Image 1 (cartoon, rainbow, N blue to C red):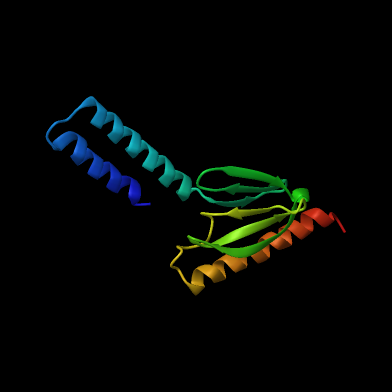
Image 2 (cartoon, rainbow, N blue to C red; image 1 turned 90 degrees about the horizontal axis):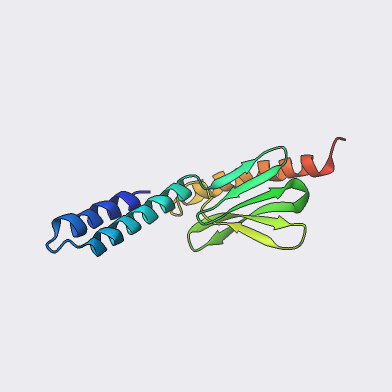
Length: 134
């Protein structure tokens, strides 16, 4: 989350204070700063939102909306960045929701426990919505 302010500060020095300020430097500074800010915002809002209609998976670079009837189940997995939620689809495909894990990748057992607790709730919601009233 601190990456965007750091890039803004370094870019500001490079662009505005360092000798030889040019329009190209200014455009590069604004582009990198805005890109880092957008990425920081997307990572901040990353997560899985469950509704009556299904789930919305918000990741760093894309969002995916899935109906309960499309989902077979949820499990935990690992990525380069740490624990992730894996969504198994009825079609056999799997979505790895990178950027949605509870806590930081270095959070250790506590982050993994939070993730597994969330998976229990998600699987229970999936069962309730796919089995119907009963």
